[in-house]
Amino acid sequence: MADFLADVAQAEAALRDLFPATPLQLNEHLSARYGAEIWLKREDLTPVRSYKLRGAFNAMRKALAAGSTRHFVCASAGNHAQGVAFACRHFGAKGTIFMPVTTPKQKIDKTRIFGGDSIEIVLTGDYFDQTLAAAQKFAADRGAAFLSPFDSADVIEGQATVAREMVEQLPGAPDLVVLPVGGGGLAAGVTRYLSTAGAPTRFFFAEPLGGASLKGALAAGEQVTLPGVDSFVDGAAVARIGDLPFAHLRGFSPDQVLTAPEDRLSITILEMLNVEGIVLEPAGALAVDVLRDLGAAGELSGRRVVCICSGGNFDFERLPEVKERAQRYAGLKKYFILRLPQRPGALRDFLEMLGPNDDIARFEYLKKSARNFGSVLIGIETSDPANLTALMARLDTSGFTYQDITSDELLAQFLI
Image (cartoon, rainbow, N blue to C red):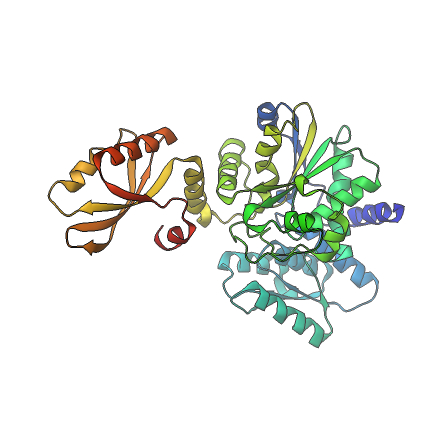
């Protein structure tokens, strides 16, 4: 076990050739809210704006030291690709990075900037599983080293450098550490390091509600593959936690895994941006978001808590979607299908029911469902959730026929 601490120390020392330790910042806003010391480990401030560089760099460093191939392959549409690209340029190694055809141009361009002439980007597959299969076959055919984003002992060791830095930066051991979980490499590395070092620290884990693979595996006592995941938290939406990470994490209780609803997570992203000026991607905000649940359960008061902000690669073209999700979760925006009578004055009658703070954000005739009625998609946003509750009561009293589709994911996907 001591060997692991020594190996992590070596990995951290090597990382200093790339970047200084990421800041560990006491957040006054969150500390006041929860009556605790809330510290943020700012992994969004690495050169590639996520912790993924640590694991990719360490795996590549050890492979090169062992005299293996200087050609590395990975499959990723995001942070892992950028970490591998940066490490390839640092070492002067060759990298082939497979990305889905559907990857946004912004992510492709950033990966290319980080890797420069050291990398080649291959766009293949409409879905990540197809991209992954192509990358693994290519690596096997060319005798290249395939770099997993999380299912690798050397990657886990590299991610554990987050914990070593944390211990060096804190005035004392943390009472709680809250870790975001996707494939599990970061959670496995940090928990193993602190446990091996004998730190009296409790752990909680944060997963997206639509991708809670660790919680499912711990509840089942074995690996499970989710039938589907919500891709909003693209940095942590993993259907199956990695085998090696699960081997390190299987001793934890499913009660220690908290799930963050994707729409609530949007509120946290906007709050951190508007109040703190901190740009976090959805996966990077997971640990901060579940503080709500920990606070409600009485787990935070008077304690020293570290949240890992795992990444800040947020595409601001997503900001309208994030705002939309946040408003819907907060009850400040609703969508209805309204059956509007096709008679003069019907629309005016409806508009007169709106309150002074109710705004129409969407109004669209869908089709004429009958000769005397028309179906209308209407979106209304307001300043207080009670306003929409009152509006629906007035609609019921007046006899308007409507359906609230705000939480209907299938209809929302096609109509909103």
